[in-house]
Length: 293
Ligand SMILES: [Zn+2]
Ligand SMILES: [Zn+2]
Image 1 (cartoon, rainbow, N blue to C red):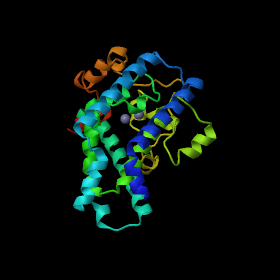
Image 2 (cartoon, helix red, strand yellow):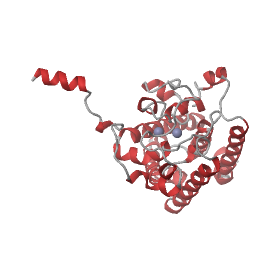
Image 3 (cartoon, rainbow, N blue to C red):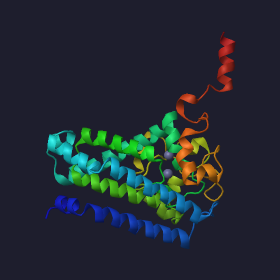
Image 4 (tube, rainbow, N blue to C red):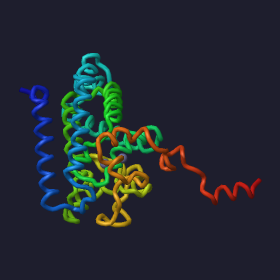
């Protein structure tokens, strides 16, 4: 049986096996050697975060039963997309498709931070008052649907091998759980590892309340895009123990922890100066403009 046929016929057990396996390892690691002291009760956060994950899986199955792999099969059947046009060796097609898909996820993540209406949705991921393995899968249902539609579009353009789509999704799921975990690696290991994968210390910077720190380290899987495009930040200013996690303007469990509060979060409150087109000129600029008048 070819690798392709094996992966396709065992897709669900492969996905679930990796999900539960890595979830269990990271949850146990966090329990035995937590990196930071949690500010909200773990059982309350887990109940609500996992409730949202369950709701999202249900909605996705309902809306898109064939999911991303189905779209890749459709694109292959139609002969659509770059990879269906060129006959590359399998290993090259699969590895480059995984890397290109990861780039698009990075770009999407950058854009949901930059565009005000999309930041409303993505705030749900950032409003978590602590960061741990469950934060890795905590996204608003509308952002999950939007992500899937963007993934469909990228797949139609790329025409990636089916097995690349499964590998990519399993890898992203696994690395997201790993790098959101409340754990720490030995400093030397972290330094080496973050050249090939986003580590917990690297992604934690992205969950800081400080705007400039949140606007860095957008990678979920491969760390290269942030280094390449200048959005890499090695450590938080306040240090990992003292940095504040979340969003400055939402600090209560009603908005940040309880499931109905999380689901309502995109629809309440003003967007502050955080997203791109709500930024103002700083006062120095305004003054110098006046003087020029
Ligand atoms: Zn983000
Ligand atoms: Zn995150």
